[in-house]
Length: 459
Image 1 (cartoon, rainbow, N blue to C red):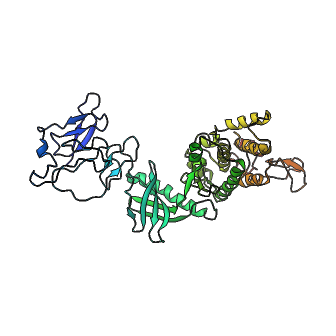
Image 2 (image 1 turned 135 degrees about the vertical axis):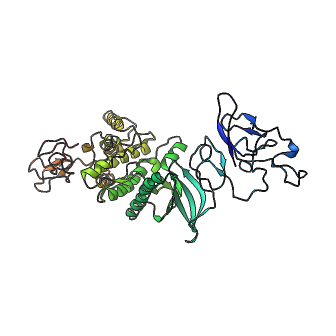
Image 3 (image 1 turned 180 degrees about the horizontal axis):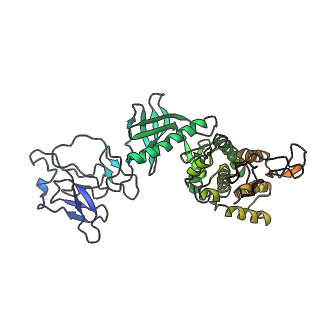
C-alpha cells in the first residue's frame, strides 16, 4: 500500500506518494528535484534492489529506462526522477495495465497509472488513453484540447465506416458539480441540433450520458482557428473581402439563434471560435458551450445573469451580466475588426479609435472600405441602442457594401434615420417591440431610451 512522505529539503516539504516497500531507496522530489533516500530502512544494495537481477532469485533485471518518458533511471529508483512515474514494487511481475497516463498540464507532466481521471500530483483532469473505445463504438485517436471541465478528442465512429468525429468528454468528479455541468453539456447539444440548418455549424451525431460520464459526438472539423492562424503569421490580417464573406456567414448563425423562442445568445464570439477549413476559404463556428437563452420572463432573465465573456469582445451590458441579442452583434464587430487589422479589440474604445481614423482620413483605412469600418464602429457602440438591431440588418449592409442611413416610413413614406423607433411625421412605429417596461409593464419600440408611457429609462 502506498505511503505518504515529505521532501526533507528545507523550504520544500512537498508531500509525495511512494510504495510501502520503498524504505532505503533513492527518489527525487517532483517539486524541487532534490534526490534523497526514503527513511525507515538501510540502503538496499544494487544486487538486491527492488527489481533485482537475474542472479537474485531469478527475478527480472531492473529497468534502466522509464517506461513513461524514456529517461535513464537511477539504480534502485522507485520513481522516475524526470516525470515522477511510479515504478512497479518488488512484489512480483506486474499485471499488464496499459500505457501510463501523462498529465496534460505543461507545468506538471507526471505519468499516472492507467485509468486515473485526475493527476495524482496536481489534481488536473487527465486525458483518456489513445485507442480507448467508448460505448463500444467511438475510438479515441488523439487529444485535441484539454480544459478544466473536459477534453476534446479526434475519434473514429467504428460503426459508420470509420467516420472521423470529434468527441467532447465532460469531466466532473463531484456528483453535484457533475449534475450542474451535465445540464449545460446537454443544452449545448440541443443548441447545435437547433442550428443544423446553418451550413457553418458542426453537426451533432450523438449525446451519451452514463453514470458519471457524458460525451458529445460531433462532426470533426479539419482546419485551424482564425486566432492561431493570425498569431502564427505574425498577426497578419486577412483580406477584407474574405472577412466580409465570413461575416455574412456568421450573421446567419446569429440570426437563427436570436430568432429562437426565447432568443439564444452566443456570448463568446471571437476568432478562436471560428475554424478555417482546409480549402482556406470556408469557415465553421465551434464551441457553443457558453450559449444561453434569455428566458421568457423578467424573472427568468434575471436568474440567467451568469457573467460569461471575453475581454475586448464583450459590450458593457454583458460585462455587468445583462447580455441580449445585440451583445452578440458587438462581439461580431469586434471579431471582424480583429480579423481585418490583426489587432485585438479593446471593447467600445475600439469604436472611438475607428471614429478618429475615419475623421482624419487615416491611410490605414482604404477608401473603398470606409463603409465597412463605419459599420464596425456603429456596432461597437457603448450604448446598445446605437448598434444595429439584428444580424439580418448587418448581413444586408455587408451584401450591399454600404451603411444604410435612412429608411422610408411604411405608412407615409417619409424618410427617417435608421433605428428611429417612430416616424418623425406620422408617429408610425418603425422598429420591433421591446420587452415590457419593468415599471409600467407596457411595450415600447427598439431604439427608445425611455418608456413613452411612464418615462422610465429602458436601458
